Image (cartoon, rainbow, N blue to C red; front, side):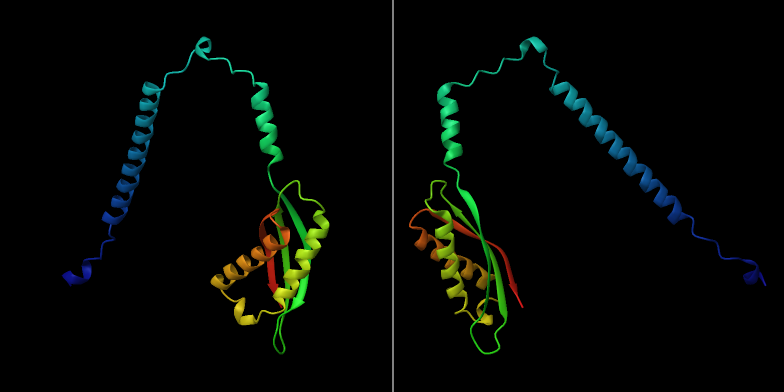
Length: 168
């Protein structure tokens, strides 16, 4: 009967250990924060307002260089979506949304974009489904399309961005 009178006791050591761990982590985080604040205040004194140097006025050559840098930036021209089917029997349809990165002083941008769009559509019609599946094939397609755009652009096209490639 002595064995029946002994009731199993709930383990209290797990609860106490968890509370101690939480308190220790909180104290360590608070101490670390206070230590960093002390180091930051000791190493980085606040500058006095009199010691702050005045910003130099921009010169005309700097302003001209800035204007030249902005004018040298390329433009991004969106091509209307290309919708075509792939080669092969019972081939799925493909929609490509592209943008061309070209020089700002490119003459007749709309005409060039139309030529690039037609040439890319003709190239996509020669592809099969196996040639567009996977990341490596996507990189190959992107480099092929970029090469087509650069060839037709005669030096004014910097690159081609594929915004969307949807396969039905």
